[in-house]
Length: 489
Image 1 (cartoon, rainbow, N blue to C red):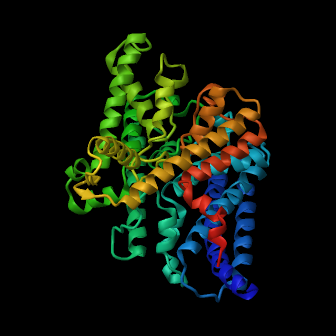
Image 2: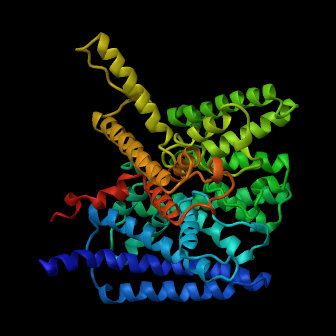
Image 3: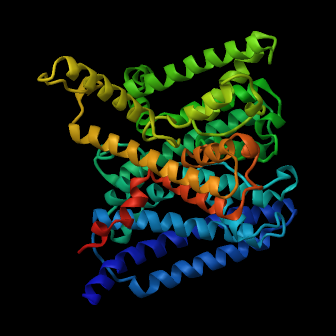
């Protein structure tokens, strides 16, 4: 039994070791940045690289000859372990750096926030931090945005393990069985080529709009990944430029639409494909509707006098908060009436399934609404067979049940974490918005966490780290390994 169990874990250990070694090479980029700009902290990333590489090597060497196809259970375990381990090792250079001078809790929080594309930060004085540290935060966003596991899937077939199990466990959204191309390796490569191309175009647009090369690349990483980290305490408000804000709006919307949809549009060369997709169409209509509402409220309250100014500020924050990116151009928590809470609640919806956003995803809310409508119809016609359709296709009841289950667990986990944060002494608004901003991978909250989360108690930060991981892995991927059935042979 022990031999069988050891053999079972050996393949997981092998993949984890390989992925950790791959991840270690990413630390060389901020190390080079530190040397190029000469503002320090290159040593922290050099040490972090060595520690991460050696750990991966030590994990891989004893089991390097193990060959076994990954099962679905293996995929879940690898994904969860890798995100947990990755967060810890991503925090190493942040902890070792002299600037910022932070402890283990804050270093792990920042790394988890970066990788999960949450964008919540415990750092202040961003404008004065070394370029190496700033770029590392943005690079964590970019790698976490599409999911570093999907990147690894592109090379896993060469390493003797299957990839589809990892892809299913990692990819956001309720329906994960569809592939863009016949082979999973080609699917992963197609996604990353697309991701890389969009990031490059975004960086170029930011640069043309007036950002420095460093800022344009950094914010392109954050915008396409719908992350929200910035190199400035004032976020994009630092630039105070309407053109940059419009460019960021477009980038955030692109990151919020399914990359499978982007691939389909590219392959068909027909932009109307976006509008024909019910989820994408619903998402865009929600953005337009929320922007109109916010603009009217801001004008009536006198927050902004001119219509163009009110419209651009409203659209930016609606898109940023609704797509769970978290960029800011103004402190939206000070906006009048119900707008701050309205925007925060919008983050529960998030973007489209298969995008880099957080939240529950638009498709789930569409299915919940359709199921609610069906139940009302059944009250009138109890014996009627009423199928639920999306895009002209009947959705199996198994998918509807899964969506309801996800919704129930999401709310249950949210309430539990909300109560824990209240127990740490936080007020209701701060605790509610902190959990919402973390589990939805949003970033900025309301109350005491509207600008950063540096002042939260240590316990609250660890709880929010778990919330960010749960949100990034869509609850079930992480919770499933905690069930006895998962470990039963």
